[in-house]
Image (cartoon, rainbow, N blue to C red; front, side, top):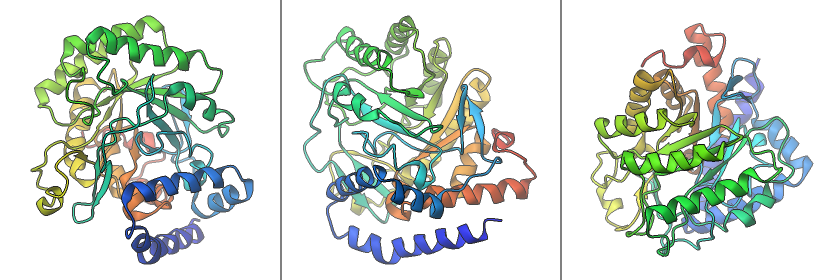
Length: 377
């Protein structure tokens, strides 16, 4: 049924690997990222390029469709927060094959970003060095860019604490975050869901964090008081023990949050998946991609086993193939997010993953993606 699509996706991936990626990798990472966002924004405004890319890369099947937290997802593969932090790509995202798209992380106030380098490739590690520090234009500037979102395509908004030293107390941090949520709630834009980012490891050193359950509880109580009109999920850190993760999950399960996302960047610079010669080039920042995969999978399983009856789990980290995504789903993830895989595999990757998922589901005898969730937890 999909043999023609499979051929087009294979040729697209080969072209990217042999021609486009080598050229892109000649240039500095953040510059290429900005060029990609600009290209995506321009193409997304034009119907003909959207239709052409959708014809080439979009894989639609009822096998992949599911309803999660009351939202209809055409497929389980989404763009994670951190890639499209200025809302440049929602119009083009469906044509690339994504089933949902998170904008952000955005904050109440604008932040110009940490000192460079903010983004760098670790090719041997299949990773990106990330040190943006929640760079964004601020929620007031970004919300208007979310007008005219694609119909029947879930677009979410990730919100975090503004990365400024003036926000130095717990009370100020909570006020900053809730102010951003209030602005989002007061818009008529059809945002499908929220993400609360408590886990960005690249904030200023004296910043307030929410890693202690009692501090997280205060933030969640404040958000509960807003009675948010959209489902919301908490973006979780990776580098804490299972016991510490359980304490955080317990706190979240007692709030109105719908679920959790596992997880954010890898902070362990000695992680065996990282090439130490590459790491040594960048003394500041943390790591995406393959070094996050193992711990992400472990925590998806933990969260599903112990809190799966209460919390929806979204898997994120090290997704480069259909097998990577399927592993997260079978461990308990209802949805899967990626970004770094696009850099190393190409923009056709979501379509390739969805086509591969259909084959994997058929091989295992499942009629729908939802049947596979948690089967290996």
